Every structure is written in structure tokens, then in C-alpha cells.
Figure (cartoon, rainbow, N blue to C red):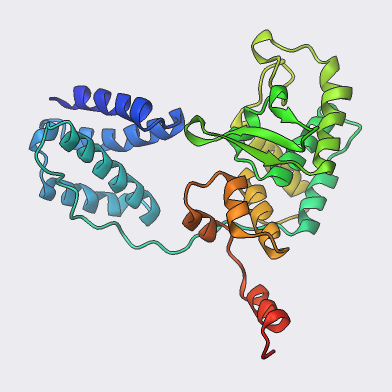
Length: 294
């Protein structure tokens, strides 16, 4: 089995058996292809632990620890697949340890900062109601940017107070949507979007650009960057920041971790624990408010 054949088989495995989203699949394949370029004169069967150790060492000169760790994880997954397929006897990457990672949490916005960003939208301008609905939905429901761009009118169940979200690996979940967020979405859909000419491929997509097509991830990032600057906020703000703020604010106001996990669509509660960090002042306040020996 040569590299291209092995990679193609691995791609099918990721798609059909692990049911990963296309973005995740491409991320895995890019990492494997880095190794393929390094050892193009060898077949995957001939790769040994020393090859991977050398490859890992070269990556340490070029990439941050988080990127090194991700590449190594992809390599291990690839060779695990080859073991399962009985193409090789053992995984040559199994004993190689990932670099230690520090906890790298994104900036969190306060409620005041969220409001400042939304209030920076001039509602007299074209697309203003759409942009306000985008920001309110990101914060109100804690969506990933890809979940937002793929959100459809048929996913709205406002009578029951939920929206249906399609997350990683095409897994669907129901997320409660605040009444205020429903109101903002309805204003955009019923008063603005209804007058827009929409490409027939995107008639069910909620958020539409000026060409009548669905918005891209890049467009959402640019909108947030623009309005963060207009609001005078000096933080590295992205769609993920809205999601992180959603979870953090819920936790600070008493929501339980399991409920937040379900709303965010995390498979593991451990992911939610890291994602929804608490600062030390909040922990201190919990002791002062609730400990019997306060």
C-alpha cells in the first residue's frame, strides 16, 4: 500500500465509519500529507518510530505546541487505521508523547461588551438587521460559526422555544433559544429577508448575503472584527468568543455543567469544563456566598 492509496482509504474511514465533518477530515488529511511529503520515497509500511520522532522534531522548529500535538494525533490515528486494516502490525507513533500544552483560553466578553458590539450596528444601513440577528444568535445560543451559517428556517421551532442545530459530524441537537433572540430573528426574517431575492439553493438558509446565497465563515469573522473595532473593544474577538461568553455567563449565573455541555454539543464533559473556565474572583465569591464557614 502506497501513500495515496492509504490516504484515500483513511479518508473513506473518517467519512463513513467515524462520520466526521468535511472540515475535520481535511484537517486530518493535511497533517498526514505533511508526513507523506517528508517520506515520499518510503511506503507507509516502512515508517518506523525513528522516522516519526525525526518528523516530530522538525515540526517542533516550525509549529506551536498545539499544532505539533494536533499533527501527532493525526499521525497516530492514521497508523491506528493501518493496524486495523492489517496493513501494518503495530503503530510506530504509539509511544511518542505530545508536547505539553498550556491552557490557552480565548478572551471572554462581558455582557456590557456584547451589548457594545451589537449597539455599534447602524440599523439604518443595509444588512443591519441581519448582522444584529447574527450576533444575537451566536451569543444567545452559543453556536459554532459553521452551525450558524448552516442554520435554516426549517430548524426554528419557536413555538417550543428551540432551534435544531447541526454540529460536528452532522450530529443534531436541540438548543433552547431565548425569547429576545427569537424576537430579533423574527424581525430579520419577517421584515427584511422576506423582501430579498434568494438563490433557489439557499431558500431555507436564514442568513443570506447580497447575492442571495448563504454567508461564509470568513464573512462572519469580518463582521465581528469590524464591529468589535467600532465598539472600541481591544480584544481578539471571533465567533468562538461569543460561544465562550455564552457558556461562561451561563455558568456564572448558576447553570449546571451538564446542561451547558448539551447546549454546546460537546461529547465529553471534560471539554466543557475547560471551555467554561471561571476566574479566581468568581471562585472566591462562591466561597464567600455559599460556604457555611464564610
